[in-house]
Length: 339
Length: 124
Image (cartoon, rainbow over all chains, first blue to last red; front, side, top):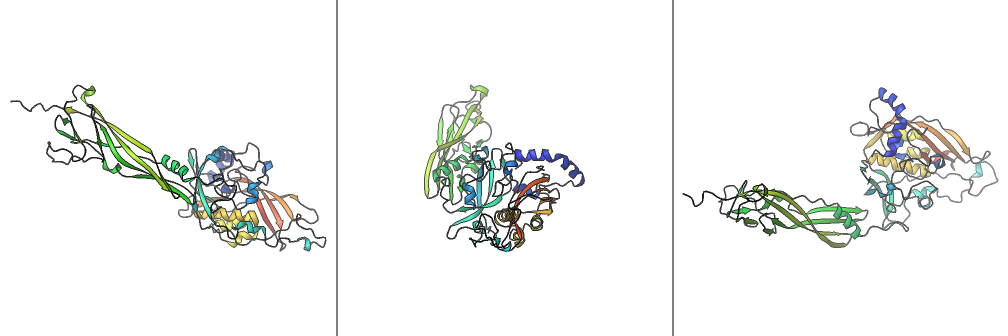
């Protein structure tokens, strides 16, 4: 969360910080840090905005454009010039939202304003309240409007906020003019890109050198042979992509390809050498003696069927594959048929 | 107002009515929401800032209802800590912040902060 902007801040404050450190070794961000208009944008930051340099540090990314509707809709639609960066790099930040139990303060107090009707009477009467319900009404959700307050966390290139930021009001179904909610398909793409599929781990069966004309058991570490999922969500819509292993294609290095529908069976200790794998095996007919390094290169390529569901829709993506490579030494049984 | 915030931030009690004693409108909203975030993140603050506010402008010399204040607040003694361990929330130092605030006359005759803007560490 140490942004470039904050680094600059630290440099600027280092002279005083040095003195502080010598007195109190424990230093922490001061409370103002999270309401710093150089880092975040809130109604009020327009005050003194003109005195902030144009090269002021980039603001903290606002929540994903359109996703949250700040309660102060008026200022949102008419931001003072220079008050926020709309197309800045930071808007690429990816924010995730968590519904909170925040409730806005229920009371505030109406203030006087010269822009309201002006009474000519006396100093006490100078407040002419044409609106008896105060501006505080902006702080609570409009009657009948569904929605909730969400705290959120953002990640940008190379960084992720450890802390949640102050809650924002997000209306159910989003506000008019807001960016559309991503479609389930778009979320599915995002979820798919977040899938982390394990590389297969080739087990050696039986351990060590294989023998010509005796069954070789082909198997993968079974722990990876299970569905893997990833979820992408925005408030109210969540889509999960799931990759399920369907088959593994073994290139055995002697010109043969064996396809199996499961991870294969590990060679059980004590099994007779003539026993073949019940589900995934190969029997070498020649030794690897003539191959580079006197061994066969073998690869196992796992195919994953990728489906997604969420947001009232389902779909499928093209298969993904993961693979692993190893070498296998295959020897003739020299003793057979002699003496 | 900042004395109220410092008192409330000691426990991050975002529901505290004290927040509304000298703040209203946008200012109250920002304080309340940020203290909720502190509470949510398990953070509290210790100490208090020092302030040196100056009136910068006033809407009417005769019947002032809006005053804009600038302040240079020293928050090196108002830092954020983890509520559970008492450890500093991070290794960033506190500092001095330029603050602009709009203060308005309320219907009950009191003055309330309606909006404020805090600038970064070292801005004054």
